[in-house]
Length: 180
Image 1 (cartoon, rainbow, N blue to C red):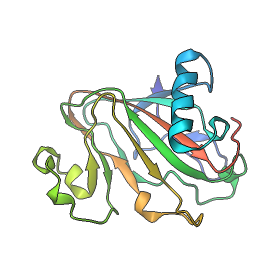
Image 2: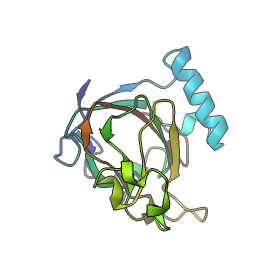
Image 3: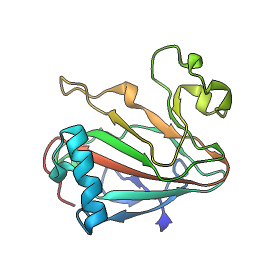
Image 4: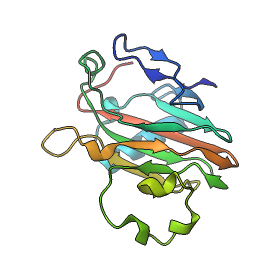
């Protein structure tokens, strides 16, 4: 595991940033039976071919660590040369989190305070539609609309962990075959 980075829009490489403070690592696409089974299940669920997916990332957030709200799609041409735009994200939760660590969508519309777990959310989690991490759960969200335009409601962040640890695994999928 190493300090997580964000993508540099000029080089396509990773760079450290205060907006993302977790640690992580990547599992090569198809590297073993477990990874292949996960990738196959995601492909069957999303109808997006396995070949369109990036490597599976494993993330660890300790107390105080977070990822500020961001988009998974790219706003530059450099990062869309390989596989085109990121169109969807499957975020799998590998642990429960005692407090905090929610995935929050600040631009989501609707009566979000009506959800039954509203009072269990951190202040950050109350800043939009929020999902509490629960081991074994996953969320799928789209960065593009059906007409292939970018979807600003996909803005999301990882709220700071207040108590416990958060383990998660995002899988990003592109409009075309992706080669790392």
